[in-house]
Length: 306
Image (cartoon, rainbow, N blue to C red; front, side, top):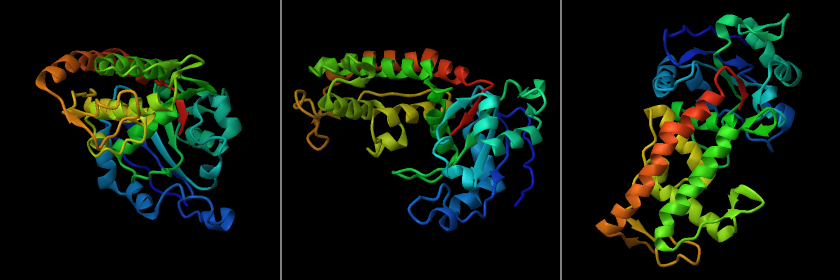
């Protein structure tokens, strides 16, 4: 089943939006009902709706890279070997997702003879979105695609992207500085600096990051953990051009030696908030001026399987 090519919008960060695959694919015939469908029926309609596509373009309008977005449907979206595979080479794409390779050849992005990117497209970031299924499902949107870009950019050729690792480390260290003012001693796991020392500290990191974020998910208190918080801040940075953090109005500062209790928070004084604001601003500036720009730059001109 083929669909017409969307007309390119000149000078937009999204230079092409090209769905591919079989959008009538019945996963239950092949996989039964034990696998969640990658795209819900309403999402499939959205992806081919010109008005919805314009909203996606607007959501991505402040991104720095030039992106080619390719939502994928069909059998490939059930292949665990390529889901959230991250940054891959042209050769990797040919070996692991040949349909995707053929799509880029058809679009003129890849030269099939030389197995390289064509000159006119070599600096564009290609993102294959292999569905939107998740435990805590949220309908596909421009924001959700930005969030998922973060997931897809975490790994590069089988290794964790150093730019992502730097963000995780900086956020953990920032939380240590911020909440250390109240006696919360957040420490890394000595065997893995991207994890907390124990479950109690992990819960404080999850709680503390959500309290200083300003995304809609944070205001609703539904950010699953600190890693999802990072992806939400990344989406905010790309969507608005900057991430915005804030000093919370209340915190559970009576349980610093235990896991925090969001239902037992105490209102912070103006002095408390003033002390926190400096540390929070330091983290915000580091994310906006250094870490998130480096993360986006690390995927410039790459091919991403998400």
